[in-house]
Image 1 (cartoon, rainbow, N blue to C red):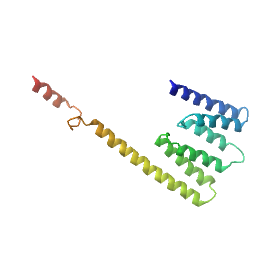
Image 2: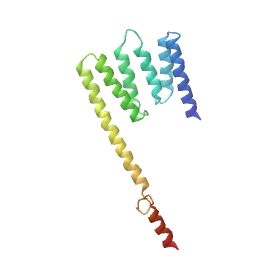
Image 3: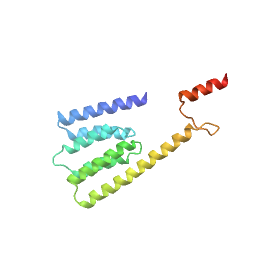
Image 4: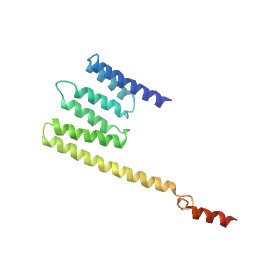
Length: 159
């Protein structure tokens, strides 16, 4: 029940912060609402980070450091799914290509993204190996999908 509550809280906070930004024109309070949700949850809701990005991208003048901080925070969130981390990392590269102060920052973002990609691939491979081991039976045999002929052989051998 707690998970459903936190998801509802996050969704309502995103909507409220959007209202604050678009209708009330209060970006600081909108960011504060979202930051409080991040501080009080595990921070895995990508919508919260996306809304924070939206707020920062629409502040004039644009402060690139604040945008990069949000993207870095999303990637650094341990409980964030790997796929989401990759998307935030890619967005960081794209943002840095447009607004980065120099080429070294862009190259660092690309290097970090490559490392993250390798880590995600390794994690996916480890997960695949674990799931294959879980399929093994106690006798060390592996489950195989039944074909119609193998199922008929099993039935006829018992009778």
